Length: 238
Ligand SMILES: Nc1ncnc2c1ncn2[C@@H]1O[C@H](COP(=O)(O)OP(=O)(O)O)[C@@H](O)[C@H]1O
Ligand SMILES: [Mg+2]
Image (cartoon, rainbow, N blue to C red; front, side, top):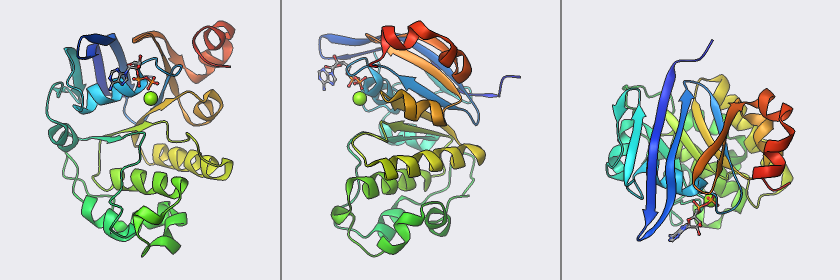
């Protein structure tokens, strides 16, 4: 049976100035699912996340979180409604320690839930424990990626958007991020993962949406994706 629908993206158009990049992007994510938004470089994955998060206000369409349309709201209001966005560039406060970065981000979620605390973050991200007092600006790329995900969780979001979390990281860190995503799903977190790396995606996702030239061209579950030999060769780098 289909999970309860958490987020509906419907008919999303977005543009940078005169250049339209998204054309009616539509998909749904069920509560507790991990949706992989897959597509080649330049397909529109990051723009989809920016449009959902309010960083690039969409020109048209609906972003409905638990039935509430948040499309076109300012980023802080989208975040407050329960959508946490982790952009590609791993923003941390470089002049603050790892622990301070987590403390700054701590707040209750849209439903008043506060399941994520600094202590829980260190339990789920054991690699951050020995780095607790280190300045975030001095972390490696992989450590910063862990910290940005942990920071996003500190806001107790309903939906977590992760833009290419495995990009450019060492295999050991990629495996650790994969483990984390599976653990988050087991705890009921709803996740959308933008990725070009289908091997990583398929190991952690439950459903797949493929984007190409700013439109969704394929949707299904991971088993259907694996069983469809043309979709990978047509729309993804192999
Ligand atoms: N700030 C920007 N200004 C103008 N065009 C952009 C900007 N960012 C991305 N684009 C263009 O939008 C399209 C989609 O980009 P993007 O969403 O970043 O793709 P992806 O994340 O799938 O690699 C590409 O053609 C890209 O060149
Ligand atoms: Mg991108």
